[in-house]
Image (cartoon, rainbow, N blue to C red):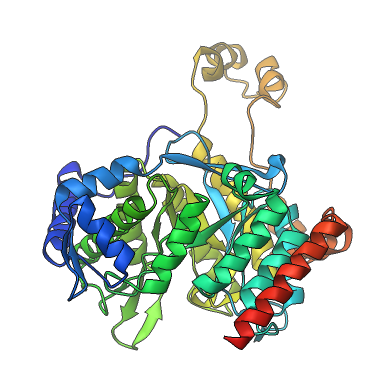
Length: 479
């Protein structure tokens, strides 16, 4: 798709960008990491080491934007599952499942329960089979040891799936062992650099503050040039301005500041412009993850990412945890809006309750929504032959195009969306013993879990992962 929906005018884009640059010049970032402070100062930042304040000149921001890759690889365990991440318009949006989820939700029983490692294995198996799902987010099971749950999860995801993994470490100490697991499966450090099986995360603590352990993580990722996300998670009206324009400027300033930190400490490291805004519902005091205002702000931020040719990411979280029809509407609306805004990666597939819970059934439905969205963004071809002038004249007033040679010629050449779960039968037929979309999704989910088998890792590699996990548990539990 060569054209996108632009919610901001060129002048408004410039105003937001200049306001964000002013925030970085005046307030800047806050951090206390000695290595980061030294390198930022050497790069031209105005560093107050005692106060931990780092003001960023415009020139430093511009240099960071130029160093940020426009495209990069998120490798699968095998090449057929590789994902090429690009800020350009050539590919449909990449789809990623939710990461960090701690609860499991069953649509049929309407029961929330703690997520388990067995659930993680099922999620990895489902993701491996769902053709419109590209990247697997690591959940946070609650039956694993709290000191090493992230290592248990990564081991399961590496064993049970072949797609790229967004691995979420508990700390920089845990990340060292995660990277050992990645290196083992990839075939060594250099192989991991060439084919990053996993991407990572570095977090801001609002507002504009990077804790030391997050920077330690960044330096570890940088050793292997692993792609990283820096989530931008302001709550509109709480720790971000109440006005939509103010929230835009606040978030964009964090995006730019993050780019400076990443590209100063780890030049050329791949990253996304990753937005996860939510807003304070002022009447009830609750967090809202989906609203027209959130979609408008995110659309504007995705437009900013396109302006600087940075791959972008956002999520389609649902606020509710039990209303299937509302979940499907919110997810479908977000997928469509963000895809038309030129997003690179749409995250949080299968996630509900603001990302705290995941539903395998929702993953299956999101796979269908992703197929619909991908077809929508591909557009269609217009030329003399597809315009069908001769066919229109040939059929004339009869109106029978079904038997015309033009229809027969293009019946398979021009692709159509083919639903797997959606039912487009007339009302009388669809209610004549036909099941609901939730039941159809449930049947598909169970079918995948029963029949799909991911080729296991070789036994020596399984032993090596067990060895790494045991070493990590010994060190981290004693710490």
